[in-house]
Image 1 (cartoon, rainbow, N blue to C red):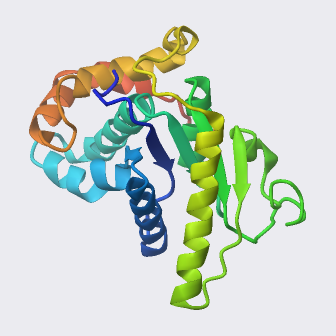
Image 2: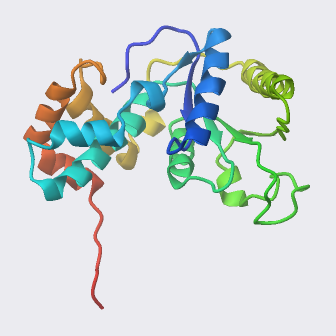
Image 3: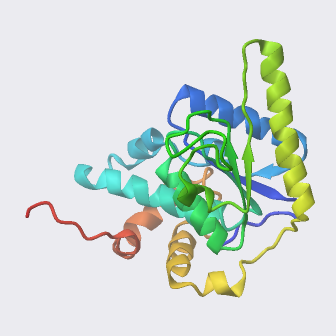
Length: 242
């Protein structure tokens, strides 16, 4: 399922959003890109927080099923709505590289999206900081079409603004040079990929004709009505005893 968007280029920031440092950087970066008239599919603003979704589910499903339901709903929103309807995935590859970001970047590439990897980190756990990927694991970096490194010393407020402007300029130039155009549908090879199709089907069940943030109650109701099918899509076999 694709959200009804205009022909403006749409960016999805694939980034960790679990602490003040991450959320502040994400929101600052996205605000600057919005000022350049990009549209943003921004989970931090347009998606669900774990706590809020848990609270909404508390009196509707058994307590031991809440965590799974929260994970599934967020997964289908990000992977089945936000990424398919964007044109560019901007993947934050700072240390520690977030596992969710890597999966989002990989699937976005399979969906035909233009993936930009961004790294501002000087830590180099997998080699020299002078190598092409700044010493990060090359498997993660390979999910990018373009990889941007940008060291951001921010010793003063003025320097912080200068460095952020430089990073935004690099991202903006990369997108413009790629001559990306907005597509309303995924390419056939992505739509018919069985793994991608499952995600799109799950998103269709939950979010068809509903804005995710405007009608959480209806989405929860849909999840409860279709929870077995949605859980099957996300199911993983596991063993705890050997």
